[in-house]
Structures are given as C-alpha cells and as structure tokens.
Image (cartoon, rainbow, N blue to C red; front, side):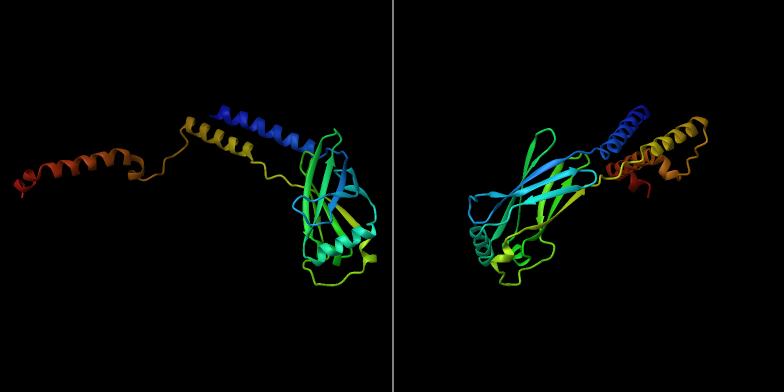
Length: 228
C-alpha cells in the first residue's frame, strides 16, 4: 500500500511542478468580434472589430473597433426597442493557429442605454488557453426605457479584462504518507496500544455465540420448560 501511495506522491509532485511552470506560460491571442443586429432564428453576423491580447499572463490587450453605420445604428435601436438580445460572436485564434468560437448575449436595451460602453471578459485557464469570452454591461443591470440618440450609438467604448482561473487545492500527500510510515514503525516496535473496549475488540466472536444461543433456545422449548 505504501508503494502505491509513494507513487501517488511522485505523481502529485509532478502535477504541482507542471502547474507551477504553466502559470508562467505566456503568449498572445487575437479575437475577431462579430455581432448580430437583427433578431432572427438564423442571425447574420457582421464585423465589429478585433482584440489582440499581447500577454496572456499580464492581461495586456488592445482593441480596434469600427463605428456603426447609420443603418446599423437604426438596427441596434430597433433591437433595443423590441427588447431583443444583442448577440456577440468572438472568434479566438491562438498562437498555433487553432480557433475557438464563443457566443454571448446581452439585452440590446442595456447596451443602447449604456451608449455602447461594454466590457469584454476573456477567461484563461491554467494552461494559457481561452475558455470563454463574454460581453458584460457593467454600468447597467436593468433597462430603464431611456431613449438614446443615434449619435450616441456610433462608437463602442469597450474595456477588455483578462481573467485567470484558479486551480483547486493540491492534497498534502507527503504529510499523509509520513503519518502512515510512523504508524507502521510504531506497530513493528509494539508501541501502539489498543485502547478499545472488550466488546469493540471481540465483537466478531461474541455475536456468533449470542446468535447460536438464541437459535438453540428457540429450537428447544421443551428443554426450557423442563428446567423451570
């Protein structure tokens, strides 16, 4: 058993070492932003802009977004007036060329009433991979029904936040194995005292005897009457 635990300790230490090296990993990704401004079961996405995360470890990012055209401004205001959702598609391209696509939605009225001031949350796992891109309206939690002029629905003012996920705690297997080693050595030296009660020590012998006595009494009622 101790051999298996020792092997598990080695594996745990290797995992911990691997994790320590992975959080130092750095790289960059590009995110192509597209949005749907017309409510539809099969939405059509058009380009909104691009985000470049220059350092995943430090969370350094730049964003370049084009202004909305007059037709797009009308579409967004109509989307908000009808209480529909604004859909954002984020296409992430990593250093190795692999791509992932994420879709997020917010109330169009919240985006309009915030005057296109939104937040882009980019979540990174411990391996430095993007696992989620979410659009958040930080300044609004509900729609108030305010009428926003088209001029204020032209330029996005977006903040990009890179968030790193935190791993769960690593079990302290070294201390556990040391405890088992101490207990084993104490047993070999005869230093471990059994402080259990008599019943706790010998219940496995007592219970069968009691059962046999009960069964014998039940099967020999005449013997019981004769002894009375």
